[in-house]
Length: 505
Image 1 (tube, rainbow, N blue to C red):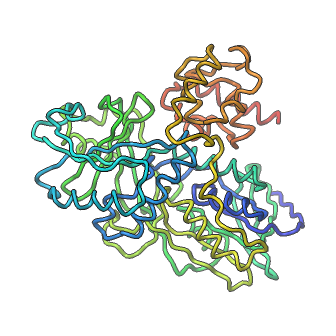
Image 2 (image 1 turned 135 degrees about the vertical axis):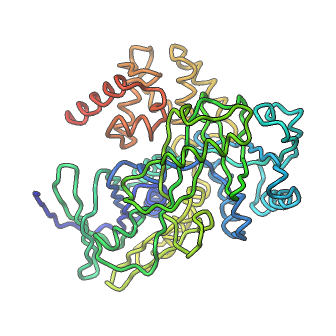
Image 3 (image 1 turned 60 degrees about the horizontal axis):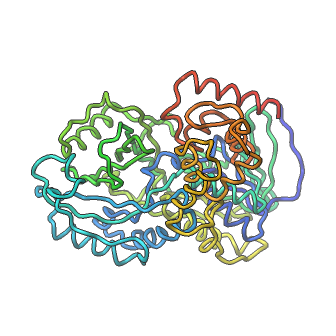
C-alpha cells in the first residue's frame, strides 16, 4: 500500500461518518465559521440513514416507555424540519385501527392527547376519530375493525435529508470526502492525526484540533480499532427491516398496526406505486457491513400486516426489501424495541484534544444532536457561534410549508417537454434548486441521454458535480429511489456512464 503524508495546518473539526448525525454536525459547525472536514468510508447515507421508515415523528410508542423528554424534543423538531425542507418533508396522517384485544381505547386516547399537546404542534392537524365502516381508509381492512384514531406526523426522504445537509455544509466551506476510511486516529501534542485511506489504497494524513466520531454502527469500531481506545459506553446494534410491495391502498394516509407482541408496524404510501412496510426490531450480532432482512423478518412483516388486510400479503409479492442497523446506546434493556432511541455522548479529552463519540439518536432529532455536540466542543474550539440552524432552510427549501404543489405546477409550465411525473419528482427532490439543476435547458435535447424513467444525463451530471454521487447505486437508491423502477440493463448503462465520467474527471 502506498502511503503519503502531508503536513498542514490542523482543521478545527473532523467529523467521521456521513450519516444524518455526521452531516448535521458538519453543517452546523461550518455555519459557525469552523473549518470542517467530513470523512465517510462509503457514500453519504449508505448505512442507517437511508434505511429508516422515512418518518419525522415523535415516536408515539415511546410514550409507553415513559420517554416523555425524547418524544417532546422529537415533536418540537417535527414542524421545524418541515419548515426547513418542505420539498423532502411532508405532512402524513396516520390511521391507527383500534384492535379490541390489544391496547384499550382509553390508553390510546390518552397517548394521542399527549402526542398532540407536548410538542408545540402549530400547523399539523390534531387527532381525529374515524368510523372505518364509512371512511374509505377502512375498505382494505378486515371485517371487525370498526373504528380508528387518526393523527399527524411527517414523512421524509431520509437519504436526501442527509445529502442536503452535506451540500449545505460544503457551501459553507466544509470539505465533504466520501470513500475515505479512517484507519488510524492518534493524538500527538494536542493535535489529532488521522490516516485516511482512499479507494485507490493510498493513505493521507488529516490533522484536526477536535474529532467527532459519528460513525453510527461503526462507532465502536472507530474507537477500538482506529483510535485503540476502550469506550465507557456500548453500542447496541438493532436491525430494522422494511418491505416494499405494490400499493396496498390508494389513499394518502398511512396505517399503524398494533401486534400482539407489543410491536407496531407502519404501512405507508411510498413512491406513488408502492407501499412501505416496517419495521422489525431485532438484535444484530453479525458484521455491521453485512445487513439484510432475514426470511423470518419478511414472513413476520407479511403476517403482521396480513392480520389487518382483507387480502393476505405473501412474501412473493415483495418487490424490494432493505435492512439497516440502529446504533442504539446500550442501556441494558431486555428487548430491542425497549432500548432508548435517545442519544448519548462520550467525550474523551485525556489526550489533550477532544474526541466526541455519538451513541444512538434518531433522524428526527439530528439537528438537536448536532447543536448539543457542538456545545460540548465549543470550549476547546476557536469560534463560539450560536445556534443558527433553527430558522435556515436546507438547500432547495426556501419556500412556504405546503407550497410544494405550486412549485410542481410552475415546473410543469416551465419545462412542458418533460413528463409531469418527472418534473414533479424533481421538485420533490430539489425544491427551488430544480432551476439550478436545469440551468441552460431549453428543450428535451438539452437534457442529454435518457437513462430511463425520467432520469436524464443533465440530472446525473448534477448529482455527481453537486451532490457527491459516485455510482449508479448512489443515484438510484440514495439520491433517488429510481432503483425500484430500473431493470438490470438500465442499471448497467447508468453504471458505465458514471464510471466513464468519473474516470475522465
